Image (cartoon, rainbow, N blue to C red; front, side, top):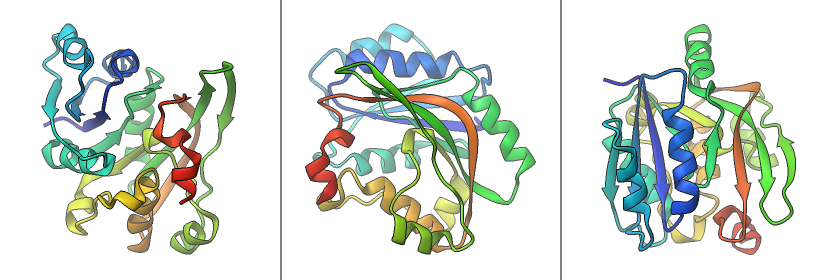
Amino acid sequence: MPFFSVVIPTYNQCNFLNAAIKSVLKQTFKDFEIIVIDNFSNDNTKKVIKSFASKKIIYKQFKNNGVIGASRNLGIKLSKGSWVAFLDSDDTWNKHKLKVIYKEIHKNKKFVVFCSNEIIINTENNEKKIWHYGPYKKNFYNFLVSNGNCLSTSASVVNKKILELKKIKFSEKKNLVTAEDYDFFLKIAFHGYKFKFLKNILGEHLMHPKSMSNNFQLHRN
């Protein structure tokens, strides 16, 4: 049984997916599995995955009807790890990401979500900036409702046991696409679970024209 299950949803992003998977396989902490949920891509996604020839990779084609939350939910369902780490197929991790998180989990047993900081890269002008997530507040659910999301999916790792215990899933409602991660973290916070925000910069998040998170109109709605 792996310690971490890394869930990667993807659709027609083989040019980014290669780097995402590489960044996981290069982790200095090796006790993990990778679950790629592919929304029946019609590019070279399958070829990219086969090129790794890694037994750590589980590949599943799944029609999500444009709802990325459905792909993440399937990934969680298929996962065998104690902790679920999320990584979008156009993002990458620092090679020490899982090692740092593993140590933090054992130092901070009362927390069920760990979120690190990220470098945000705009592919159109190559502009880079650091996004600092958090902070955690005592009444964190109320804080999230009042202030909006302060986490990143690709930067977050969640205790699978609490997801099963409270039957917490990503929303599969189409009107919550791009905000399904906010809804997901709200559900966890609603039950009073604690979040730990790390100062470490452990990943890179790409902003590009095809990125769902770059669809500001959809996100605002």
